[in-house]
Image 1 (cartoon, rainbow, N blue to C red):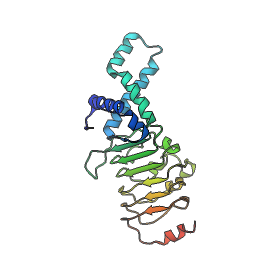
Image 2 (cartoon, rainbow, N blue to C red; image 1 turned 90 degrees about the vertical axis):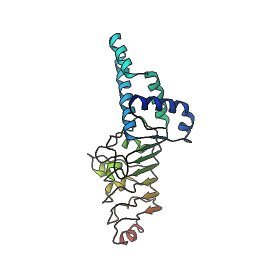
Image 3 (cartoon, rainbow, N blue to C red; image 1 turned 135 degrees about the vertical axis):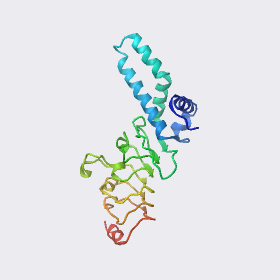
Image 4 (cartoon, rainbow, N blue to C red; image 1 turned 45 degrees about the vertical axis):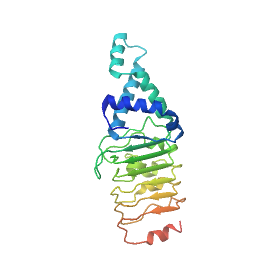
Length: 237
């Protein structure tokens, strides 16, 4: 699907999703959006929600003007229904590496995701809205060139790690190529992780893996590690 913007982007997306609804819902086809396009879709869905809240009491002329501005709200309703059923999503920036797209990411419409891939987004400048709510469903996350800290992916920015809920279904995590410096305490929120790829970052020390009791595959290649001693400790957890 060509990268376009605004209403044209939305029209193209609506048509694509309606035509491919079956494969998208059963997971044989994966929806891929760019951050700016995702942001625009969210803004239109939020407008749809506002319209629905107004339906009970607003003057008819006002509603007609609002619907005209919103465009085909029935198509948006159908898009919203399908997005709610998707189990896999890719959000990939079109900007050249290593640039990150600063457009805020909102995953609220995708409440059933089991697999999420983020590339070239910027979760450190602004939190990905709706990401933490996916912890009940998400089984696999790929987050490349999208964050400066692991806790920006796995934990709230305002709560202590000890007070943060765990990701009890997340078994595959790849946070490679993020310029990460610390294996911070948010790793303690991943008790179900079996595959953990933290390669191509800037770690000098292995830390906070004690609660990753199901860990089978760990990739720390192309970091700045100076000692393998922490692995000896980990093997006795």
